[in-house]
Image: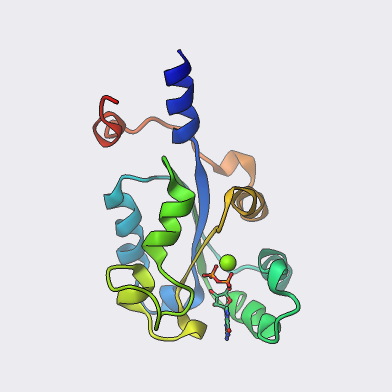
Length: 162
Ligand code: GDP
Ligand code: MG
């Protein structure tokens, strides 16, 4: 029973992932989604949206003292963004690994930014950096009813017997 509860709790870990306007304009939506999907993570919410400046400022509130904050918020709200919630064991931390370092010049090959981006101002994707920010960002971008709970038939194969 305890094991079942633990497995369930792990399964329900969720993170907020966004393909920023540069990733959308460059035609990288399916490439990025496929990396999360093929890994075995589960998509539980997705929409295309042009975020308001207010949403952008709330999303990046921890950077508000940085000189690039205003330009960054203008950029995020300048065009369509793909907002997503992905679920799976360890998805917050591993999602950041799939994404790679903030500066694409420092991202390892094999990561999304390492393979697909060159400059920090064009790093194409956002991913929550911890459990608290994941919760806040999911709540900022999605209404609770936009999150879909479902069992994927692949889960028993992805998580195995242990
Ligand atoms: P992330 O979590 O890896 O996206 O990085 P941060 O939370 O530190 O920064 C958020 C976003 O701000 C980054 O993805 C970049 O788009 C942008 N950013 C961060 N640092 C810089 C910088 O030094 N210069 C510029 N122009 N943009 C930056
Ligand atoms: Mg960040």
